[in-house]
Length: 188
Image (cartoon, rainbow, N blue to C red; front, side, top):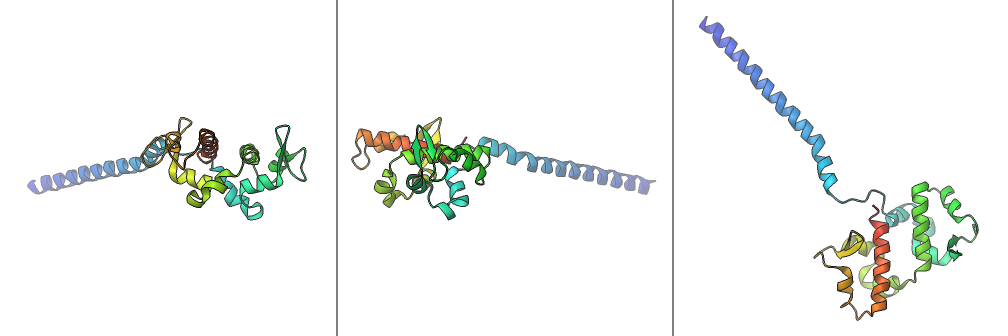
């Protein structure tokens, strides 16, 4: 009888042990599925792709840098982009040229802005800061529409007031440019 009781206790403790292990395993599995979603929800990541990376990956092999392409081959007439062969249908041409709807509109807007923007960043800043999109990715963050230094969270506009003897109109130009590029890089 004592032997039977010991066997039953041993069997019961084995069941409890298996039950606890299975509950622990289930909990670990649930955490492994939930944790990445919780952490990714707390991070501020763009919902749509970085337009400049998209261009570099999909378009630059044939068309080069987007701003150089825009300034060399496109022009703005009555607020609309015209290409050398697609004067009245450049927007439609983009749709038919490997772009889906949300990319088509965003790329069109980026090229339109680049066509109308002087290449001052390339000419005046690139020797230290590479291309504007790279500079934004490496050095700036966009918070509620405002640019901040990634390292110390200072306002970019404040920094520019003491950078390279920039005048007020230069600061305005660069803040407009960098904010636009940040919105193209960090697309909400």
